[in-house]
Length: 273
Image (cartoon, rainbow, N blue to C red; front, side, top):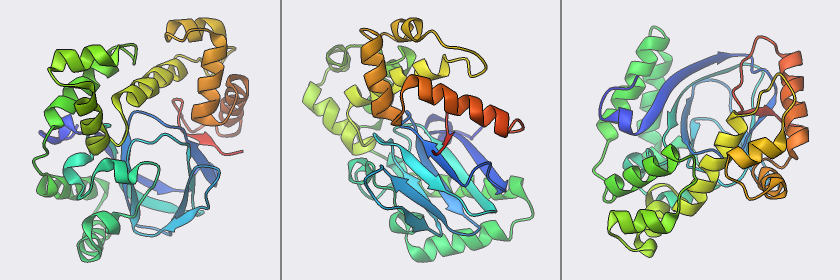
């Protein structure tokens, strides 16, 4: 677990090395952000099916997204990264999170070329994964900045998370003693999306994690349990978030389990078609 106060901003730090299970993996929108420091060959990222993939050599920063992000990996990859809570990148960014929405950037664009080059060199020469993750944690602690409005956004996001997205956003602003406009503006600055969009993302995520990847799915029950108006609404939301129908999504999950039985996925990511 990350030490305080990082624990309130990030979910975990990880080390990745080896051959990816697929050359291309898709990451549907989820209530999280991502920071990766790359130590191997460049990888490619495409944020949306209507844009070209771009190459990332030093790593990437991805705020809470509204579009599918596709990762293209080299045959062998090596990196350290951070799974970040929706609001968690804000204290480390020199710009509003909304400027990075659905626009992955390199770590250099956020922290500067010289600083990132030094960090990558220290990570690459560390004795092992534990020491590498400690170095990354220390770098985050050093860069942690006071962020106006973070308490408001964090508390409101936590309520949205606790309800699985099934909460009236207007009630949240009233409870917080601020206007809906002010709350939305703070969310766009610190998360990159509005609280309404974040609630949609939490609700969809809860529905997906309720799917049993080993068996059939009762889409009507899943939709109802997640608070969707009906199955048609759920299907529309599913395509908006993944580009797939629910049935096709489950087929891809099943194929992944058959072809890569040693790899565990909990809903995300998915092999690209």
